[in-house]
Image (tube, rainbow over all chains, first blue to last red; front, side):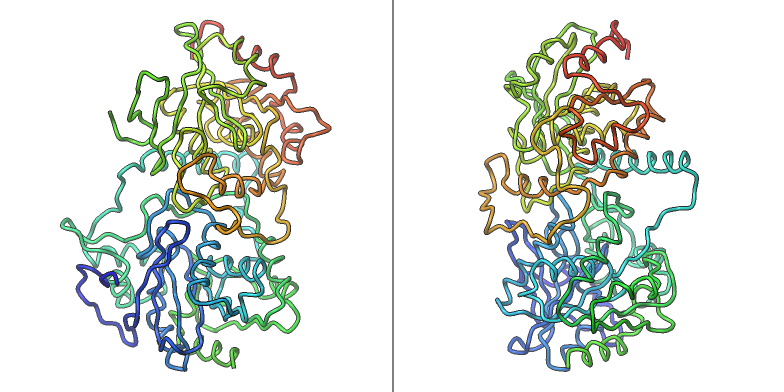
Length: 307
Length: 246
């Protein structure tokens, strides 16, 4: 078993606890890290995190679900958390990695709880492999609108050209690139720019489990080749088509406050695409990270749905 | 030997320059020396093909017409380039492969076949100052996965049985044959090339209308795009700057 948080000083956060087991799954030669909470003999449930997150962002929410009698199996996406850094990244590859984790649990269909980008990945998995998924809980991972700035076409061309050149320039500088080091507090403050609604105590805890301490400071474990603001031919309506096709029970949980990493989903935009019987719940006074801001509420909704 | 991305890490006498693109080692084949000082041409192969040491026969006539150096790039997971652990291929990552070659070679006319034609379009839009004309020719993988998702699918190790070393990587064939290419997305790259390239006609299509996939039909309708046969297209860009003053 790999060491947990090698070199890290423990940072306490109320209700957060380390996983009971850590293991590695081989996905076509790539090592995917798996973190489990709860008794190994309990019924399994798969947790999938969002982009630029990692499995241990479930450190408060997952123990609550485990305490109700589930074996929570959370995995780090390639390049995230303790999983191996890859040469290539794609959503299809992430879905295949998830299937490898499911294979490591067993052949029977199990429930999936997934946040943000992870929610989208799991819509694809549930649509492609309905025989492996019994329930879907999607936490603020239902994009219904295109995030397109309201600008004239010629300006959009220049914006887009700048984005593309920026992405390619980033690719050119990657060989032996490392993330910028800093103190634990500095990394927490950087993270606060993406997670403005989350407390500094939580963000300091996240650094202690999502970063490693090198001689010159702390560095987030995430692959330096990954970059926010990707591009590609993805369309929100493609996810809506996946959602609409699902035959298993579906629960959607949305935050109500828009924030930088959120997808500005309006429940009214999603409702036409909900499969029959699916339920959509908006949790008041929460942003994109609903399960971090209101873990008791999201755990209660999840357990009630699974019951 | 240098180690920066896009920089040469090995240049053996065998005519292959090895370039680093993140964790992949790309093979760039020197296909023809050409006249010193004349502009360069970069060949991008189709899905499952390789660019060198012997390029696909259907482009050899056009390549012989080129006055300057001719280079051929093996995409990630193809030919003499390395196979990445765990796959995850996208046309956008392959655009990064092509840009890595451009970082080494400087401005080039880019001739792409099939999948390589789509990548030539992408890099032509993203690097309009470095791509001195993109020639889009027919070849394997031209259509990709179409304009929108079809039935759900996961490229499975059980189906593709990769051995991790030999090329083409079976997962490259599986993933890049399903890579989605919406017409408006593709056309936006043509618009960028038209707006930002110094060339009046930065893109030339060499695929007959009847067999064009939807993305290529949309590109054909964009400004700055012409239609010629392959040898005419190569001659057109060779004549853009006969003295080789890039």
